[in-house]
Image (cartoon, rainbow, N blue to C red; front, top):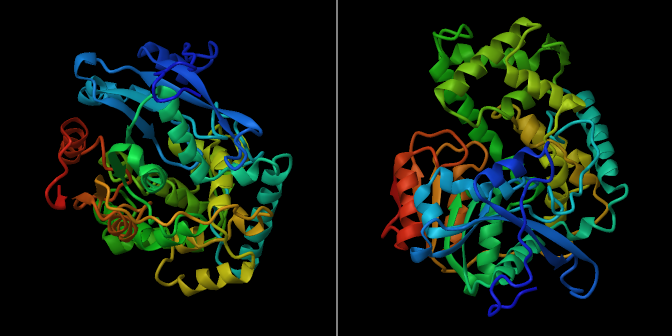
Length: 462
């Protein structure tokens, strides 16, 4: 690994495309990116032991005379590839001018030695359904998924942790020969950024956390906080759709349509049978975007599910195919080991069922999804480290949407309190996940901080 004084010596940069079918690699190459691998220990407690490679990408600063440094980028997940983020300069030329933009695939993800759970579905998430019997079906489903993850990977699972990803991030910094790095992280990426600040704060320059998770809850239990925010986002959609989308004259009528769907028996749509496990998940997976285009599509999908339509939107068709094992998104398969390795959870199925039942009235659509049992309840590998306690006064810019259904605002405020040197700018009236690159005020704040260096004097709103 390169030292701080040897620059990028030891990194062998090369083209990114692995072949004619590698769309991401071709996209990176078309933007002048380079790719490389950084060799890291699988187990940092044994630095001379088994090694693995972390794949990185780079688009150099377009204004080298005024280059600020490197900006490491993470899209969240866990389990999401980040190589393609090196093309951020296409969307924000100011950042592309000031920084070498660095994307990376976290360990065990994408090109970094993928650790994929061989499921016949893209996700472990589903609804527990309406009854104890349907919940027991979920218990069996999640236990089977866990067993499939563990088979053949038991020796790697203990090292699929956020703390090890953060150690890899600092290894990337060292390999690049940089004394400090700047960082932008979204969603789960905010947790990685906060852990980096805690573990390697002396090497942190300008950090931006977008749509932060609650640092004291991150792990399988994080999902249990989503229900109220998801229900609020659904009501926001219902208010938008009322009287104009054919699913209800008032917001309450729209919600009643959705509630009948969730409570009813299986429906036929798009050539699939959609049962009480899948239907609420379909809504859960799309309610986190509040654009008029996405709301129009969601309304159409609700009509199609209500009517049992053989023809559905392309998005719904892709969702249905994916949950039935015909999708190509592997982020959940790659990300589940991180959820389970970061924080231990109860292995008692009764604990989850009691929680679901206690929240059915207040979270009628999403509670049985967000509070349902997960593969982590059957995980045979215990965390090898305690979760990181986040508490420091380093400067950080946080941006948020007030109605974020995925990382609810109370958890974002918890991160804000833990990072005592942070400033937070909130987009009001917004019910989406991910604040940057979508709102002029938020975008200006993020780019202004990363290029100018001054945090807002006080928290603000957009």
